Length: 179
Image (cartoon, rainbow, N blue to C red):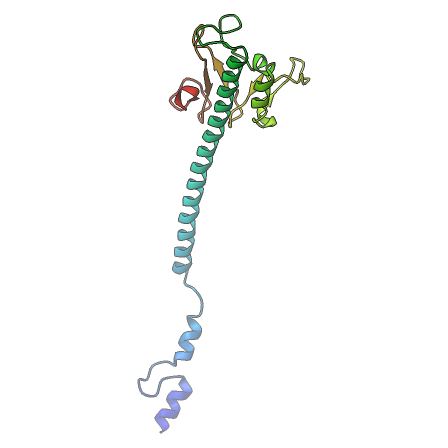
């Protein structure tokens, strides 16, 4: 009996002689450094994955936005052709399709089509910087001008954006030919 009382006073288990489980649980109530580091690493891996996916989704959304603007410009050029009842072999002005938006802007139905492009992606400025009400530039998702490139007399022009790398004539260019 004396042995039992002595062990209880020292916090040892009566049968095994080991320390009381209450004292053990008090010492192990927190997380170890390794456990915390494992959680931090898992969070970092998940965050990296989310950021990577987010960048991929954003890039594709920008490409889709630019393709949409190019499609709108193609529609405006087709309406321009229809307005003047021209064929691709006999364009109405200077034997070519327009290479700038100012000519499209003068045809009411073309203007209505161009109005589908958000105003922050269109420019209608005079050389002095004042607005003139005539659209002369459309910008892609990377805020670079979209170009209308002639393909010879009577041929439908190519509409080209520099694409994500912001340089023209590369593999990532977005063109009306690739739509």
